[in-house]
Amino acid sequence: MLDYIKGSVAELNPAYVVVDNHGMGYLLNISLSTYDAITRAGQGDVMLYVYEVIREDAHQLYGFINKREREAFLLLISVSGVGPNTARMILSSMSAEEFSQAIASNNVAMFKAVKGVGAKTAQRIIVDLKDKIKSTGSTLLIQNGAAAGEVFDEALAALVMLGFTQQASQKALKSLISSHPDLTVEQAIKMALKMM
Image (cartoon, rainbow, N blue to C red; front, side):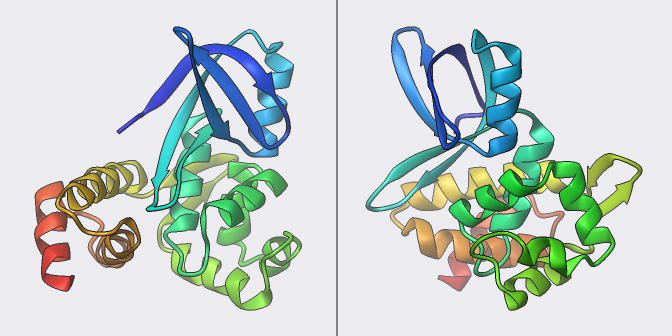
């Protein structure tokens, strides 16, 4: 699994960036927050944290300017009904810090203001993520977020290599990790196999 990509910016627009890494161009879907950060940095060399979405019909990369934004993205896509593009829209509308504060303060209106997010989805985001996020000042603290994200990524890769579909594997792992955030990769794989 890719963790980050470092290289020069070959192409940049508000929806994606192409990063040239040793003569190979990686197209990464980005939020407006990441776009702004790259623009402010002057479009020279950049390092983006990565999340891979591998489906039967597509292989997409999502890029994030920092780990907090990636962690917020991973939490969002763990919510039923929130896909990668919706998560990217949410993070284009608010920073990772604003995202955590909106959840901590039950600010449904802030999520409803995002295109494509209705009242039910906004409420589900807050209910599902309330226990996983703690807001202290302007710092985003995701409880078990990084560890759970790594377990999810590694277990997902293993299940896909074993021949299970990406979608079924993601669904099983999201359910398992949200109810058992302290699982090891091995435990997550074994439990997911029993569910599929």
